[in-house]
Length: 257
Image 1 (cartoon, rainbow, N blue to C red):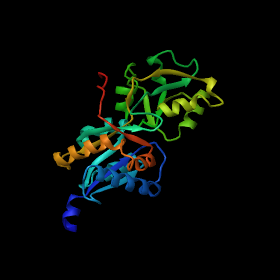
Image 2 (tube, helix red, strand yellow):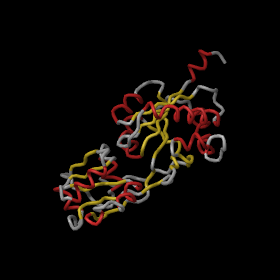
Image 3 (tube, rainbow, N blue to C red):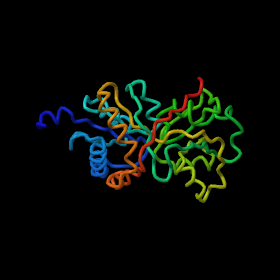
Image 4 (spheres, rainbow, N blue to C red):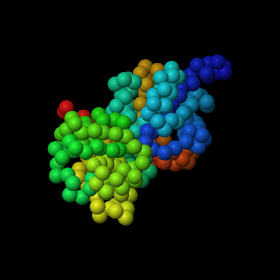
C-alpha cells in the first residue's frame, strides 16, 4: 500500500472526557498504544488509526467536527447530549477497571435537607455530568421528575461541591460510582445523605461519527474491540487507559419527559 493510500484510510478516534482531569500531552503515548493495538486486532494497516484526547466538551466537539474524526470514545453523559447532533452510532461499551461496563450514579445532599424531588426546586444539582442535563434528568435521576426550575451545572471539583453541600450551601451533588464510594470516607460524610441511586448505566461508549467510517471497516473494528480484552498483547495498551476491554453496547431508554 502506498503512503498516499494509507493516509486516505487513516481514521481518527477522539477521546473526550469532560469533568475528568487529564492532559493531552500525558495521554498521547497511551492513546497511541491503544490505537495501535485496536488497529492490529482489526487487521487494519499499521498507522491507519490515530487517537486524540480532549478533556473539555468544547474541545472534544471541535475535534469531532474534523472530517477525519470518524470515531468517538466518550462518557455516556456526553453521548446522551450529543448523539443526535453528531449522528453517533454505538460500536461497543467500555469495560473500565474498578467500575465495569455499567455504573450507578447517586444524588447526595446535606443530611435532612431533601425529602423528595419537589425540594430540588430551590437547589442546584452539581456534577461532572452537569454539562448534560439530558443525562441528569432523563437517565441518572429518571426515577424522580426533576423540577424544571432546578439548575444543573458542571464541575470538575467534586470534593469542593460535596464540602459546600455538607455546609448547607443549597447544592445537591450527583456522583459517579467511584466518587460515591470515595465520598463515604470524607471527614464530613456524616453530614451528607444519599437520596437517589440510578439504575446501572453505561460508563462510556465508542461510536462511529456519522457516515465517516465505511460499514465494513466499522464491523471489523467492532469485532476487534470485543476481542481486545482477551488479547495478552493488547492488555498493557488497555490498562494504560484503565480499560479491561469492551462489551456489546446496551443503551437504556431515556425517561419520558
